[in-house]
Amino acid sequence: MRATLFCANPYAFGILKPLNDELLNEGHSVLWFVPQKHLSSFPFQVEVAFTTSISDVFYFSSDAIFVPGNEVPHYLPGVKVQVFHGMAGEKRGHFRIRHYFDLYLTQGPYFTSRFEKLALKHNNFFVKETGWCKLDPLYQNTEQFSKQRDELLKKNNKKHLVLYAPTFSPSLTSAIALKDEVFRLAQDEDILLLIKFHDLMDRRIAAQYEDEVQKNSNVKIVKERNILSTLKMAHVMISDTSSVVYEFTFLNKPVITLNSRSPHIVWNNITEPRQLPTAFSYTITNDIFAEKRAELIRTYHPYTDGRSSHRMIKAVENHIRKHGVPVKRKLNLYRKYKMLKDFGPKPK
Image 1: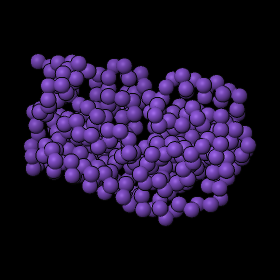
Image 2: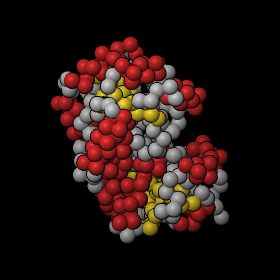
Image 3: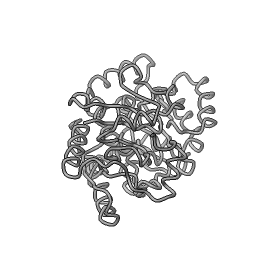
Image 4: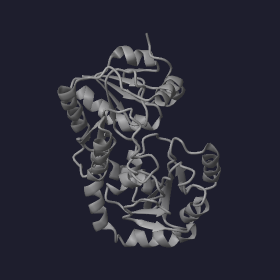
């Protein structure tokens, strides 16, 4: 199978890398598409085959194109496979059908049931539950990361490692409301605070944090693009309506959020920034959400074997055997125009 990994945004890099590794392990040919504007932040340039040219992708003549984003040019050959860029089903647009995709590979029963209903309604795509490739490393080498955490805490003479990871969405982010409180928490509690921003976080907000970090030795900003290693090390996460909350929850560890809009809250959700210190003190000593977390894991992502990438590949292979490889995807005029505007015309 010839597979293209389509990265319209940098967040796709970490999502698709486990899939890349499994594709190569199973003997498939892989080409990454990375827009020129994001090439400088692409961390795998020396280890994978990639291109910045849509023409190269076209002539690669993929059997399948794996896409974590919302769009992919309709004129590219290959089964267009939606693999998703997060787990927050409550976010605007998560279940919106844009008609770019032939196959949706869902993470767990909660998502599968919704997309299966939409598949019946639209009758132009298929759905298969496989688990999410990004999470494969989440369940691998956990002892190694526990050791790294212990060494980091010992070096900084702290007891707990806390991760603050706000979303970037202006209507959902806690980054402004919680700024003073998270720094105050780092001063008052026996913690090392790690801050990880989304790739699309407003640079003005990030700059405010960077300035404040200079004054706090026990607060560090994580620059590594892939958040998984930090998730595996942290004891507690602070966030909001970010999909990364689910990823952390899948490790069966406690979370504190500010005004989360999740329909499935199985963590300590505060409604005022001033509640953070009390919430943290309580959460670190009383894990009252363990049973509810287990139920969330069952419905959102029950696959803890680190083999979701393998299931995704098999699902696509089976789809191709049954339905073949389409030359292009049918779209309305508006979406065709948008693809031509964003990615240029079909190569000749």
